[in-house]
Length: 262
Length: 251
Image 1 (cartoon, rainbow over the protein chains, first blue to last red):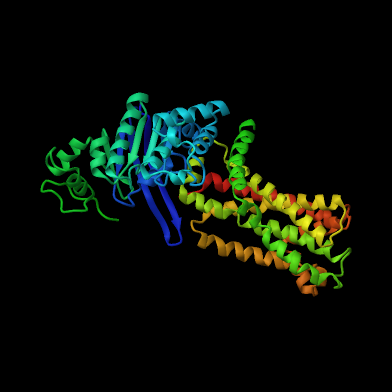
Image 2 (cartoon, chains in turn orange, red):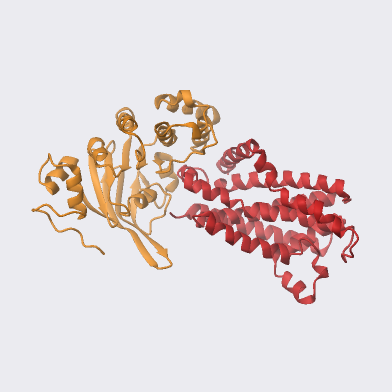
């Protein structure tokens, strides 16, 4: 039983200059416990898709089920079972780590005492215990990112959505964050759905990649399979495969034609 | 219903603590009406204002509503900043009631402006205001209703726009005519007929008239009735609109 499945999920925006089709019908299936990398060039519709799957943005077409709840008819159910960490995080710089964690746990409808205990527990798990009384502004980039993720884990979600979780982090912090994501999946069976522009990250972390461009899924598979199909060899770099798939570079000799620009 | 109330309390608590930490935020809004009270009020004491009561009974109701008008209209700025820091989305991905996300903030704003209204009236008493206590309390109730309306609308607009540069001019374009056309500083009874007629299309005018009536003890009067009706209608409409936008807000 899939934990995320979408069919024809789409979103158009109406602007002064006409309509923009940001997402043109995404079909995807994610199994419980998978770590899925959601890749695509800037403007491909990754963030829009993520915002729809987390109920932040109502779709203009199609349907989706997330963690057993229908996106359109039971958004509250989706919210209760999923966690979302946006690119920008979501903490106030002038508030302490403890207060933000407890408030967020309370917004996930935990009673006061439970919220305080759960904040401690998640903080300990993510190495934030020493920082609880600090203001969020006083955290380093890596600590800030761990706090953002802690905010999304308080309610033990079945699915965790991460939007570019390692953008702006130094190599050490990135490696730590990869370990953290693997550990969350290993210990709690959490399904992780993440976007990234770092192909080494996608290669190292994701079980499976879904590549989108111009609002549609254009390829999916394990990193090794994509390399073999699109760059000619499992030892090729994911970079070559990605460029071949998105048509943003000269295609490999046996390549299928790049999707037409619209 | 129970979860709506507890969600509202959680959101209110967060923003109330934020306000209490910042003395600047607590007192900033009162600066403009206080300056009017100190440096404009004394000019009116001997003028024929064609209204009942002393000049202070005419001016202070206007200043109370000015506090609400300007303070509450600009509340949305905070939401624009919070949209950029991701705080708004981080709250919207929780199961918390959408109305509570708005109501918790509006409740904080209402209490903040009531606190400032009390300080303003205390300063006015020193300057020479004499008015019945009931009338002053009615004035506070109008400040509260006005804050609920305008803060909700301000948050609603802030959910629609992305930058302070888009937000500021709209608010200025709405608040300045509201202030001038409602007779906030001087009663519209002084106006030529065309301006008086025009001002009747400004809903805010009825609130100003009602608070002036309250300050001279005219509780069972037509201005009071119109004021109450307009204030209740404005609050209901703005809360509905605000919640809808908190629910639907796009990218």
